[in-house]
Length: 82
Image (cartoon, rainbow, N blue to C red; front, side, top):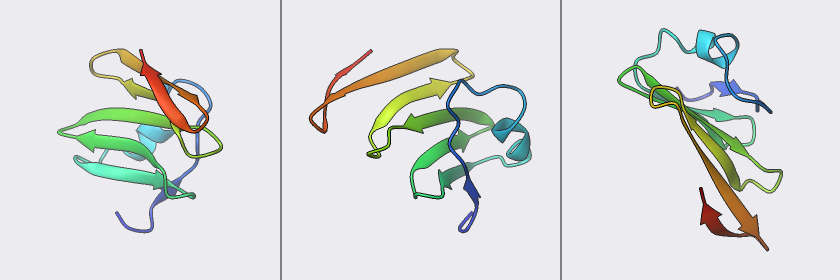
């Protein structure tokens, strides 16, 4: 899906927005305008990622499992994941 860009979301994904745009795509990795991965879809299961202004991964949502991983960064280094 080269050339396909979507923009960052600053809240949990909902049934509108990005999910609707990619509903017909079985397997895809979509990046935002900054080249950061924001959606990974494999076998119809989607996970969304939100990044900080410095590009560090902050949160990953897995809608099928209903899980959220938060990543804590200090000085540009990830020090914890919960």
